[in-house]
Image (cartoon, rainbow, N blue to C red; front, side):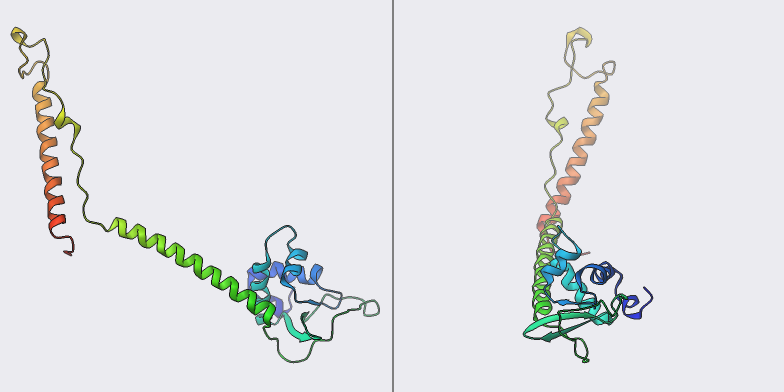
Length: 204
């Protein structure tokens, strides 16, 4: 695992690199470049085709593998396959050329589709955030009138002479005080609302 081509590869692509070493390629480290088949070999049961495409691009950039075209098909060859007995090793894949690795249609086309999908998803998320920001940046909302202000008159049968007038012993004075505070707060909120509605674009 100390080979530079592997060490230079992004960490996220290394599980795919190990899968190419151990599962997806022949004893000489070669296989046809079919992303769906490579994904099924390395990540069975998972929808990992786009992931494998991205990793193949990363591994080609790091020098871990070579992508080449021969016999009308696209292939990959590991720059350093696992050590095998040369007398037993064989491969049906064509010999890779000595030219630098290139990105061919199977990877490039699928990679473009993956990037396009990511861009669409990012645009959708940005649109949702824009709607949220617009809602938050709207002018002040009309405050809700406190229920206390609409409560029935305060009084109790225990008032002197059975009258329903305000008096200290039953706590009416305190309730009148609470009502006054609620009224004043509501007035302040309405004042702020009216000011915001009158000058919605004013900045401070």
